[in-house]
Length: 398
Image (cartoon, rainbow, N blue to C red; front, top):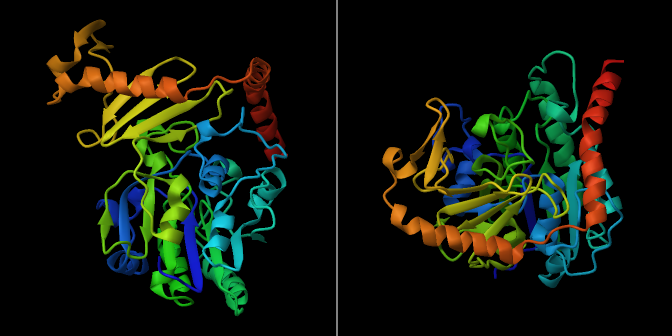
């Protein structure tokens, strides 16, 4: 492990890997010269998955090294939970960092109040006005317009904060978490040019081999006819970027990797080999839970509410268009069932029975149902949710 006096992790909320051309050229991508240089000098992880496609769950798994199904949580809710095990921040101390800091948008100030895995091991810096108020997080009238002046004012405020934190003789780790949309931009994916500017700003403060780039999760960006995130473990929401300083002389690592191992990678240069990795949309008592299990180039998805199972070969079908979980599928136009292999070309139909059985057994092995009382409470919340959402929309119009 290379010893460093300073390290800065730059993460961005809802960052799709499609936004960065190193993960596949797309016509809408911005030029990212600073990120490009870090890729050229460092290691690009091509199969890095978040443990959950929502920020609170993702952060919990990243900071504790636990998959959602390994925790004792019943529901996704704000509770005063005290985590007593080792965390990413205790790992930082073990690796010689005397100070750890998180710099993020003020709206995340609630997190330390409800999840005590931060404890006294890290200092939290809540930055006012860091993100643009767009999407379902803040309903507004009319469309947001680009504001370069405001964008660079905010960037320089963050730079001043980092300079202040770096003004120490102590060894220091800083986690800079950028919002869904940084101030001055108009929506998801529209701020990648500013994201690259933030990376360039960080590069002006510390050496390139002291910087890593990642996300907490992505967003569906049109996949399955959805735009946001949190309720589905499909690729655009859970398959996210990771760029680190050079590890083991490898410019690219294709191993399947989970975000629960992020800090082992960037602090210890370890790339754990796991037989399966998982991404969970909810905790075990919630009806809305969808669990993804990934092994090699296959992804299995189980939907708790309906019992539906999906299976995708991501090498042949990276957009997850057609599930190969069943041998028959229903033609909605002709109103009849047909043999899947007679109409959908896939060269390995003979492998599927064993693969299906393997994933089903793994799901049964890790699956835990929630407590009945909590399930009832969750069901009541689900029924009240439309009323609550209607009230919030009404309040927003006042």
